[in-house]
Image (cartoon, rainbow, N blue to C red; front, side, top):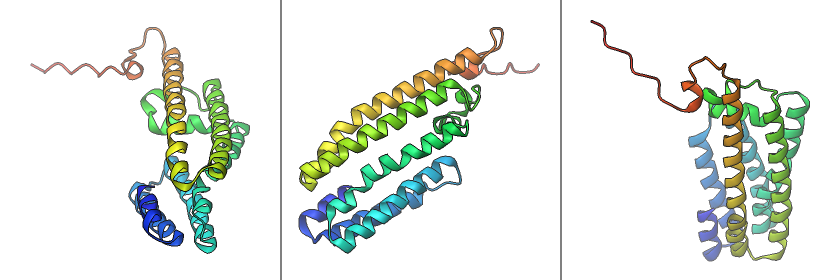
Length: 194
């Protein structure tokens, strides 16, 4: 976003959009993976690609910036379908990112359903707020305010997600089992032989 914003101050909109898109493509290239997170990243990059094409064709910086709210709204059906299939998206993400903890929880567990619903609601509210800001503010103001308003709520959502997944994982460990794999403690070092 910094490259896009910097170029938007000194160049035509299509140049700024192209620069921002190239920067996004480089970031995607170095972060691509054959995992669920990789697929979600590809999904987000596809939205950026379409918005960049529309922005370049229409010479509109705001069309390019619309990739943010568009992605917010497009993720909501992913959450809904995943819940319908009894494989909530947040459960799959948690199992991939934190297998040591989330691996103790069945994929269709209520904690994953609830968190997927809350993330979908977060994306709807964030999408609506971004659309409003995009319509009412200049490009520079939008870039700043959309982040200032988004980051605290997203940080709280991330913290709550980790908290509730950890809590659910601790409840799944049998009472007499070694809970080092859930508590976050390091396994005890093996005693030397001899």
